[in-house]
Length: 289
Image (cartoon, rainbow, N blue to C red; front, side, top):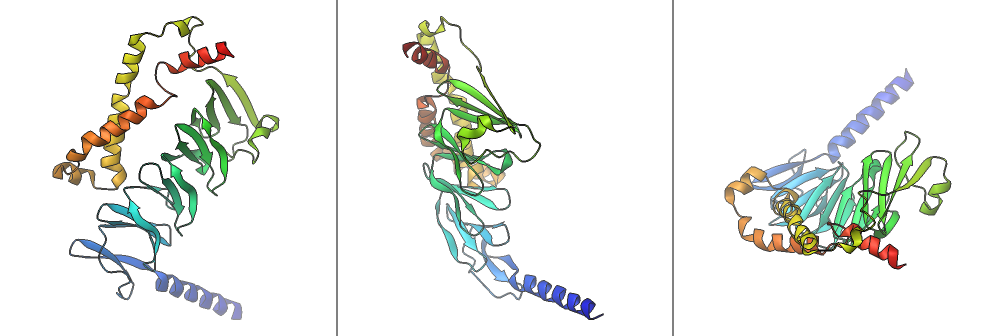
């Protein structure tokens, strides 16, 4: 019986602790702030958005800038970023152009602020891009692959494909557990849990390297238009965490569209690892070695 009452007391204490630490959003004059369950104000209503991140963090928007607060209203990550994206319930991506980073709910830096883009892969890994090269960082902040690769993607949760100097490699994890590369990537070929295969994706003919024409350049110039448009829309609307219908009705994004599109188009056309000339370039490089 004594054990029973002790257990009840512990449960009550835990519940009271949860309630005491519970924080909620309140609004005032179309702005948002934080307060506790008793209505005591933690932060004034000065934010355009407050979005919960885990149990401790709050993604905050002030004017057009984003950052991260904790439940005490303290700033964990300064509100100085134009782009925000919540990656699962525990991580947030923040950045401008070449300083994208990933933070956890406590403001700890998981992915350093030095990348032009960051996205999630299977297994809780992060795909990073820097200087047009791709790499991988795991959810603990460990750099698994440095930014030396032409392309990386995962068609399945247990399969990763990597392009390096024009050659494609497929790494398949045999077991059904969460995909996790070994600490030393060089040992992956000797690991019984992985199968490594080299293959050619979209091969060109042996004589194709000599057929570099104006048409090839013309194709690459226009093939970059659609991706640039999609990236521009994402940057101006979706990545801002804004209500899409609202921003479309206000049309406040239209004046920014031309410059943002030109910037994204320039990056896409300059990218050395895509377009119809990529395979030709690698064919030439291999023949000159």
